[in-house]
Amino acid sequence: MIYLICTPIGNLNDISLRSIEILNSSDLIYAEDTRKAQKIFDKYKIDKKSFSFNDHNERSKTKSIIKEARAGKETDLTFTIKREDLSKTKKIIKEAKAGKTISLISDAGAPLISDPGYILVNECIRENIEYSVIPGPSSVINSLLLSGFPINKFMFLGFLPRKDSERKKVFENNIKNDATLVFFESPKRLVKTLSVMQKIYPSHRRAVICREMTKKHEEVIRGSISEILSKVSSRDIKGEICLVIEGDKDLTEPSIDLDNEIKDLILRKMSPSEAAKLLSSITQQNKRDLYKWLTKKS
Image (cartoon, rainbow, N blue to C red; front, side, top):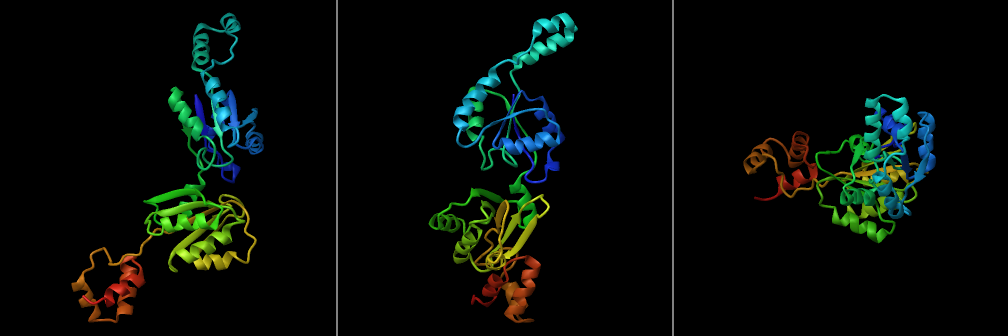
């Protein structure tokens, strides 16, 4: 059996009891970063050693893992038969035939999410090797919950490209996307990325930076893209970052129960700017778009 185990994204106390149990019972543990894995082992007294499994060796290690998963556990059955009762012997024989228990853990969070494991999972499916996921922390979900944006529809787009031209293309392709977008970004490239975004997105489009989540210096920076750029451009930003962008809400016409009859009625009592402000607070639609609709000639 192969287990994909989610590990803490910052605070080591976030690991689940089931994850600790599986790691303790694993015959082999593969980790994206063996040094970070050792910190978990030391904290929870897991007397195991991990082996490297990263982007550079995933293909070669996958072959070894599949082979190990098929192999029986090394068990001294002769000794067992002499010393233990029959029921326990049957249990050990069953475990030996079942193959080894192998666990895969990423640097932080869930394996496969911008981390190694995709090749292994597909090979397991092809070879009919059983695998399962031990759920746990995810920086993607964590950042969505912290953002305050709608999360009934969202897209995770991984790490942003390094080149400005490629980043620009990603933003342009998603400018009309109504889903909340989540990206990973390096603190070294954050200001440059926000500068590119500011040129493409409308001025009112909001974004959130979630930094060092679950750690002592966790920080959430909210505002329009230009406001956030102003806040971080003079700072030395460090740590793991998720960049969350609000989905497109720019509608040419308001879409919920607003028609020309209501428009005429409300404009008899107040100015277009006052009406736009009132309707925006009621419908949660963009005030600027409502104003355009109210002043548009029928």
